[in-house]
Image (tube, rainbow, N blue to C red):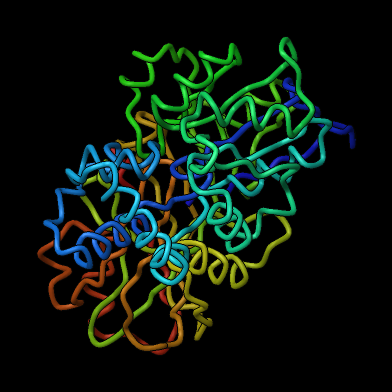
Amino acid sequence: MEIIQYYLKDGEKMNCIYDYVLFDLDGTLSASAPGIRRCIELTMEKMGREIPDLSDYSKYIGPPLVTTFQKLCGLSADEAKEALQIYLGFYDTEGEPRNSLFEGTRHMLERLKESSARVAVCTSKNEISAKNVCDFLGITELLDALCGSDHKIGRREKEDIIPYAMETLGAKKGDRVVMIGDTHFDAKGAAANEVDFIGVTYGYGKRETMMDAGAKEFANSALQLEKKLFGEQVLECRDCRYDTGKERFQFRVGAVIIEDGCVLLAKTDAADYYYSVGGGVQLGETAEAAVKREVFEETGLKYQVDRLLFVQENFFEDAVVRKGVRFHEISFFFLMKPMGRVSINKESWCCAGREHMHWVPVAKLKSLKVFPEFFADELADLSDGIKHFVTNELED
């Protein structure tokens, strides 16, 4: 995971280039798809209806739920209203706990809070449910307003919710206002209200449909989005790393989590290999503190450190995200104290996209592509001491 942390120039206060910033919630701030999907499934089951194919999140993350129940689930207008009430009954216990913040979004909201910009969540989600989610995620205090749908008065679409959010914040037509979202519903709403739009491509919508709705500006991560909001005032990341453009040195930690003969590994859709749970060490942070933080951010589980297990000097060329960049990496791998094998429901994101956590049998590591490669031999029989490895893929 790439930690996003910035410092101000000479202690100056950073100011957003916009006076008012409106954020969609689902797919923009919150990785909410697992909870929404589960509640739709439960709603259809309770109504005795067939559960539709929910594998494509873009079909139901973004539009009002009543619209989803009609168009995706095939319900009549009256049935959709009934389904909405059933859905809301499930959401507190089955949907809300499955929410998590996308990587870097909290830091971005904190920087906006410190700036002169006024910030609102502007969502098609029911306003009460949206507040509950923001409370759960711990971001309500970072917002100046929380604006959602209200079907009783006909406020359902983004075209209607954006002016409501602007009025709540005190924004007027002609002010510097931006809507940030991940779907064409957000882009269409922004265009209808003549405000700027930035589409995020790490959410559940599709870039192509946002472009069809008039979107021209995009961000593929919270890092890039924050740079767009603050311009040149944002400085480089202050992880323990150094970049020259074609080369990078970085200090990384990895967690060795073994439960019931299986090791917890991460994988992204962009790569054909598994890798250790972990990430960069921040300046002023101990390696032990970093590995506990990284494990919690990626799994939601508070594992404790048993002992330092491996130290690796790793020289390689990235073939996935920063293609062509030559890395010199120092990694500390810590064995974590067992807690019992559990299912990992928390969604995690890194610079390569969405991460998926897998419990992989240690006995099968040799048949898979896994980094670091020495895991395949070493995890089968852990020694008592600390082992040192040098891996150099850059040697001619």
